[in-house]
Length: 230
Image (cartoon, rainbow, N blue to C red; front, side):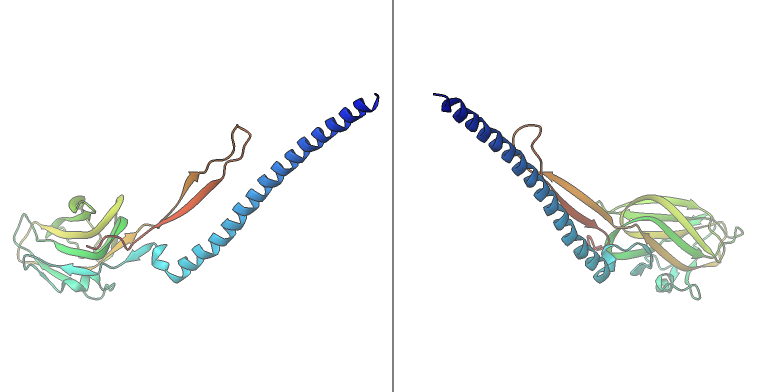
């Protein structure tokens, strides 16, 4: 009858072996899951880099010229000279009279982009004008917002900053304190803010209990110029 305790011991040993085997299998599963995550990340990175090099506009930021100029009111001449990236020629505006705002020059872009800065290269003489006005058209609402009224440098770059938002156009105008004068606007440029790269996490179900691993899938979203058409 003594073999029975030995049988129990062997049975208990098998239980211990099974329990240890389960822990080892679980550890191996967690390690494999981590390796899979690293492999996925390694695969995604080259794809993102190839997009950045093949399509720089998706990630690009910096100064660029508006794609169009429009001058309702007939007070502006050669409006396209203000968007050609040159400071050797100019768009010319004729004063409507003393103590009046001139009609604005519309500076448009073919797509919506995120912007918090514009810069202008303009004439300035306090004997004839006392301020300029810069407005932006916010999208998708299409509403105009006055972001600046004040002075600019004479024949030099002036940078105007405001809260960054999605826009597709701006308007530029002079306020005159004298009539019978033309003022020159040499160039205007927008600054496109850097594209936002966001990771969006989604939790997947794992096993029961606090000790069970949770797998997380991350999606990459790129935001930049090339949104809604104006």
